[in-house]
Image (cartoon, rainbow, N blue to C red; front, side, top):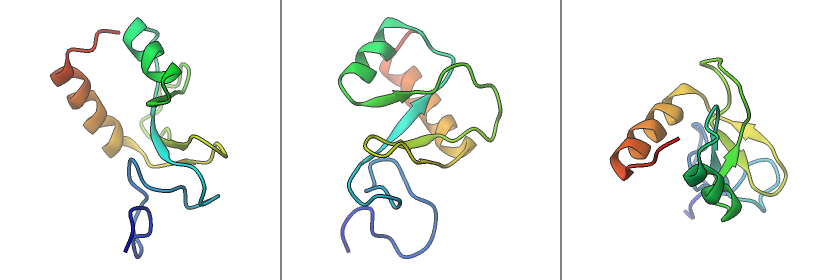
Length: 89
């Protein structure tokens, strides 16, 4: 089974988009206007989500069709990764 073609369950970071089957799911970053985040968005590594504060805001988005998925679990994973990598917002 190829990545993005899991049986059941929620889509995950890096999966093929279940809506369009063409794009890749990237992390949506909210409330972060830092230079490192802007550069990551320009390189197509993350999507910018604006100033949303809800815990149930989507955390993954398709880089092709714009469909959104996920929730808090993925956002918490990203915050841990961001800290480990030394990103500053």
